[in-house]
Length: 285
Image (tube, rainbow, N blue to C red; front, side, top):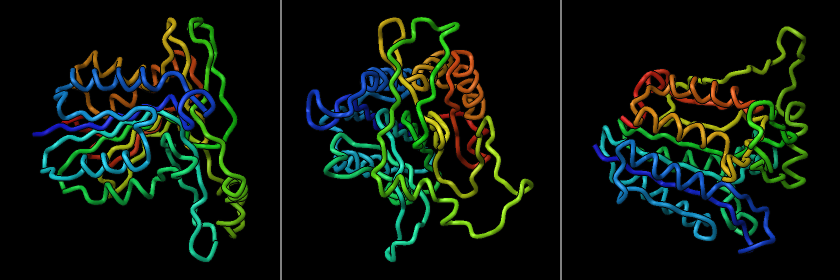
């Protein structure tokens, strides 16, 4: 069985140096994730890393194609991203709203554009049957306001920053009116969609496991851990994986991540999506 991984961490957004919507903890996250994967059995030669100005849209796509190519049944793949996230309107050719896409922001997103969930799906659909792929996103997935963290027990957490890029006006407009545009049926109190406090989502036919740092209507945060800026999700993810050497079932990892975020007072709720059978299996196996 071969294990391969791509690690993306972006603190510095274009232009290079001060001036972009820069972050502080994503390189620390990428380093911790790469070292954690080694502990979990990944060989350093099979881990590729892109950071800051090297993490362009074209480079990320090329690395993704490397990740999913020449694999065989039983191989374990990881794609990890730490940086800004956003949402964009998915418009059909006749300019009718066709939903909203979650997206990550490469270093050069202002000129090259973002990478949407549709872009990832097109690449992941080329995966051979029986190849395990775990995708980790430590970024914001929505346009909601910043959710603040409580400092009752974690007084060393300071200088919080949401990992979120404000959408373009056209995307924000359709996001705000998405319900009216996509649903013409009459709703009452019995049919209104409710928001769950925890999201372990079983998706039939999904060919990978998605680990999101927060739900679609939340932002993912980073802050100082004893002087070192880290993403709250990645900090706890790596801590759990190292403690278990990666010998942990996905559904148990999901629960422990949720408990860890709750214990530190984080407002964000992690979300894990996959087929039911994958969620019951050991990760990276």
